[in-house]
Image (cartoon, rainbow over all chains, first blue to last red; front, side):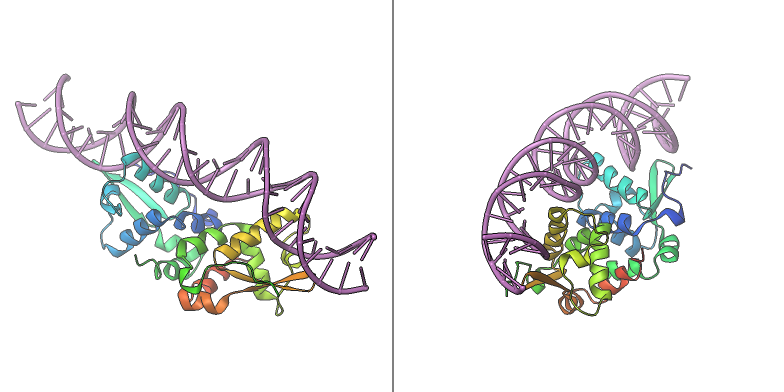
Length: 104
Length: 104
DNA sequence: TCAATATTCCCATATTTCCGAACTACCGAT
DNA sequence: ATCGGTAGTTCGGAAATATGGGAATATTGA
């Protein structure tokens, strides 16, 4: 089980979160991860299936570095989860307020 | 009285708002405009006084184009106000949720 | 006319984004 | 064990975008 780098809970910045979610693709990824009950693989969380893998991976890296998601490696696929607890501890109510308006 | 261009109420996008507020300087400007009761001039709203005028003006332009502020010209100075009503109509609760965490 | 306020114009630099290609890690089958 | 396929990452470069700031430009008030 491999854990990719992401900021500690206290290092999550408001600017980082806003910049990460300012991209429509990344916003939809986070929305998808929160909507689905189980954690999703990277390709499953992609808003449209024809995005090149490297581009998609880049978006996931940005989300990780902003502290929004957490990725673990289970077998051949990577499971992504939104770091809801950390985000709510750092910025209470922010995530919900943003995602409320992320409908298509 | 001159009104600078800014998007109509319905054209304000979530991505635009998040991108505009992802910059710390712009976030502090908006916070300052909301904290002060009266609308402020551009230089008065600057978070630190040594920012070059052109740079500051550029930040105000970004905020205007994202639909966050409204600028009118009163005499020699420009009065800036946050478009709270429009923003709350378009994305209820969003602005407050973001600015709640914009402390320093 | 002169000073103040803020905008445009324009350029250099920095950052972001996108994507192909090569690479790593894992699993199953032979 | 080794081969092959699958899932993602990393690398490198090109194109687009953002940023910062100097200089010149309106516009207004005194």
